[in-house]
Length: 247
Image (tube, rainbow, N blue to C red; front, side):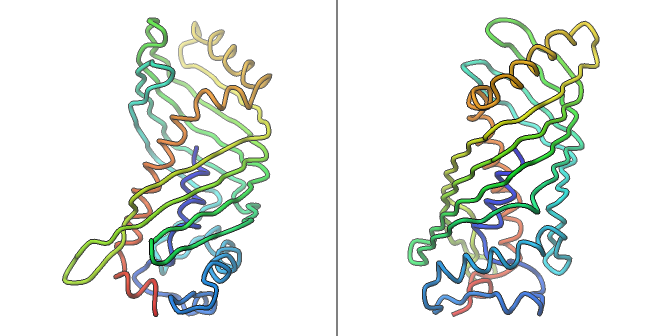
C-alpha cells in the first residue's frame, strides 16, 4: 500500500537534498534544539504541503497524486507463493493526512510517528501469477479502490556509512502497523473467463474490508518497507549526515 512508504518517508527522514530551499529553513530542527521531538512534529506538519506539491530543489516529486510506474515482488500470502507486478499506480488523498505524534531519539537514530489518512483513492494495473492453495493463478487486469480511515504507526532507525570520507545515513530497522476503517474496490480481468473470480474477491472485500485487509497485511508491510528503503535511502544519500541534521 503506497501510503505506508509515503508517510513513513516524510516522518522518518529529515530534509535530504542537493540544495536546501530557503523557504524550508524556518522549519529546520537542529540536533541542539530544545525538545527535538516537538520541533520535528511541527516541522512535519508545516512542511507536508510542500511534499504534497513536490520539492524540485530536493528532487522530491509530488506526493499527491503519487505515481509509481512499476513495482514487482514475489510474496508469500498464507503459505502461497505469488508473483505480483503493478504498473502505472496512482494514489490520491495524501494531502488530507493528519500527523498526530512524533518521537525522536537522536542518540539511537530512532524515530516513531503516528498518522491518520481520512481517505485514499488508488488505481493500478496488475499482473499476478503463482499458486493459491494448489490452484494455479495467472491473471491480469485493473484495480481501483477507495480506502478510509487509515491508521499508520511507524518506527524506524537509521545507521551511518562512510562515503567520500563523510558519514551518511540510510535506513536500518523499519517496523510499521496499519489499520483501515473501511473501503470499496473494483477489479477487472483481461481474461473475461476470470471475471467471476475477481468480482467475488471484490465483493468479499467490500463486505469485509478490515478482515480482507488483514489477510494481505504481510504483503502490504513488505511492499511499504521496500519502497521506504529505496526512496528514503536515495534521498538520504544526497547529503552528509552533518548537513541534514545540523548541530
